[in-house]
Length: 340
Image 1 (cartoon, rainbow, N blue to C red):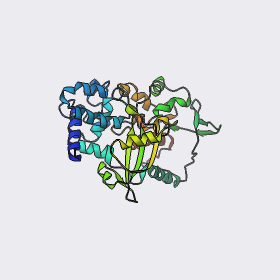
Image 2 (spheres, rainbow, N blue to C red):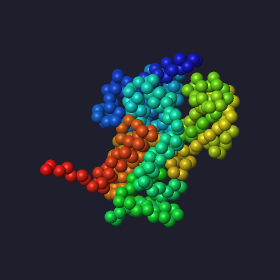
Image 3 (tube, rainbow, N blue to C red):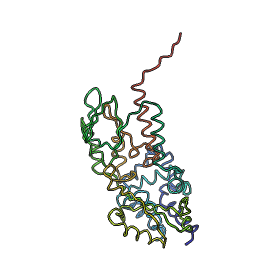
Image 4 (cartoon, rainbow, N blue to C red):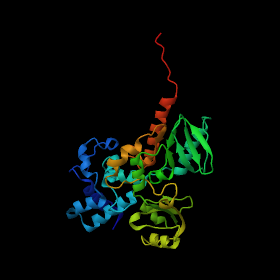
């Protein structure tokens, strides 16, 4: 199958997958940043990817079904049964309900400097204000907001005090930190349930220049950089058996792999999962509670960002900015405009 045929197959299959309204999702979710605007969306709130595929199975060829599952499960990092259909529909809507825009947004275009360098730019900009104090490699164990000021305690018994706290603890590990007063029961329930994305991300540097047609990235030494995702549907454990991972990669096609770099997000003690993908029903049951502040603690994370780019770094920036503006308005003295 040529790349052109593959693209046509995938576009056709995903078009059927999202076509819940005869308009490729545009009628049911016209505004991804206000996804509940049309209340008809609630009919699909508890639908899984498996449910949706079963619903349209009479319209799908075997190849189309495989194409849907390949794309959607790379996005969700979960299984057909535990991945919410609604999450994919939101990504689709955020991509203007268009296949090419979706693939460009989700799969193709990346930050040229990489996310680590991007994060460092935020740090350097903050340092230039002269108002930033920070501590890296510091594990938070306890957050207390019961008094007039909030207190953060660490595993090495240090204490930090502030008028407000922004908690960016990811959903799947939110309950690993002790809060006083205790976390809202809905927050605890959602964190205990966990989102489904148990992705392992594997970067392969390969010699074969022809592999760039797989949307690979050219390295300075003219090698090709390909990214693979091992999802919960068929999990990879490169940290336990790198040879097995290498064999799985080479099953796609023969390639001369020079180097593998990977991170097992499901075993990361500070994440226990990759970007968020909800279980069926989680969004309507828990999203408002996850976003809700508790006294002097605001919760900002891509895992519960409002709108189309939840799961993405865009959602993290959006959520953090919203929290920062709230604190700025609460703590910064108001300037009075004289009318004299």
